[in-house]
Image (cartoon, rainbow, N blue to C red):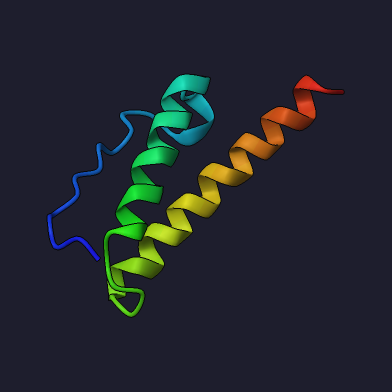
Length: 67
């Protein structure tokens, strides 16, 4: 596992107000951060919860877009 610190840019708006591209970029940052830390790290659960929220928002948008 890489030992370099990973920086996550916290969104300036709630998830529902982010553009598709901002949401995608935030998801990528979270996924990279999760891969870069130990699975037993306390922050892992926090990052996974944030990632789950992003995935839920993306799923909801896909449902709306596809009727």
